[in-house]
Length: 185
Image (tube, rainbow, N blue to C red; front, side, top):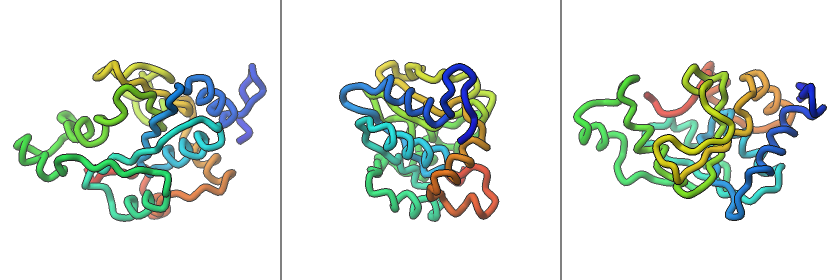
């Protein structure tokens, strides 16, 4: 990547690696891996940084089969299965999740990593809500979990440029026209 920081003279990837090295706890990071483009970049940066980590995919039970197959090609990623599938969760809640009532992510994706520093690929450019996030912060729902977001200031173009420059594999759904991938909801 050629996006040099005005003050340090480093590119964005080097800055992200510095961030990972600066905040790494003794037990290492809990890397949240979704199989999306940002997660692919995060996993590569974590490996390049030399920090201790364990990577996890929180199974939603409603992710596209192409995505699940892709994630299975990463032997370092552990699959965490929920106690209750999305379908049983819908029955329990007596309604499907909506844009306003998104209980599914809370239950299926955000329950792991307690007492850990969780590395995610969240970026400001993704949404208005994410633009309010900080690079390092405690979880607002559980102050035993801390988030580190080393690519928070990257654009979508930066992510794709990094993937291409490092010749990283990514899920085929992007080549089929999807901008974002994840659960079918």
